Image (cartoon, rainbow, N blue to C red; front, side, top):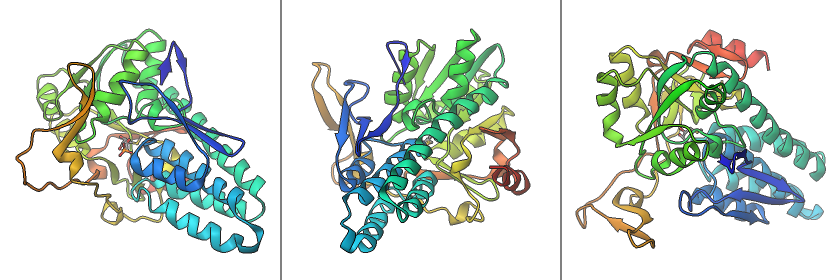
Length: 349
Ligand code: MRU
């Protein structure tokens, strides 16, 4: 996320205190909040103060390290394994969360210092991987390009550079003439709130469109390529990402434009055979029935436009089958969405 020309970290931990940008207040207010305990950090993951695959992973790693710092030596084992469960229950789809918790947990069993070291390392690796995703992704962005994205897989969704937006940042820095189509991403509007905010901070030309408008713009020839992020990728390349991704991928395939998923290796789940095995998080129906924002007179408010009394269903993610994906833009290069290429990528880490 660029603030006064500077890319800031979305989340970091110093002396056991986790600091994060409060993403629920954006784009209206920029505030960094602090979390002192692992349960507080869990609450922030659940409430989506911090969200997005890599940022959730970093937050979960920091929360696990906080649990080791809080544990008393007489009941350390019971305390940290209860904490691990609590952290793992916050956001079930995000692979990076489980990746980070497992690594920090193992390190913490040696000492709390090792837990902190590992959590910092995971955050640092996320930053580095995202930068390199930008490098490889930029290579496939033409000098004049109209790129569409979905949800927010930008700097706010990771520790720093983002996945889907990282190539866009690098292309823009090289003075390529790019324009980004940003869909709203109902129900929480991560596109119109967060991606649009990030892009405007970086002065990157962009246009917000309604969620159901992307297929129209693809059909009209206004979009050259789609780049999205991912929350978990199965061993066969099936990809879980924010609800609505699947319909964008179908439209891209139909009209023969490339559909890329930008993702660090930490998002691949080699133990998960296919998309059918990825757990899909269902969130509160209130997120569909109510919209929060700012009123014309500048006050924060929640409104509904739905029929009073009607029920809603709110899956947070969908699964895009591998065959609809052109390639994965990873920190090691662009790979094909198949088992062999994914296996090779993970072996080389
Ligand atoms: O529910 P969220 O906002 O945590 O959703 C995760 C995401 O940010 C998206 O699915 C995103 O496109 C991929 S994660 C970088």
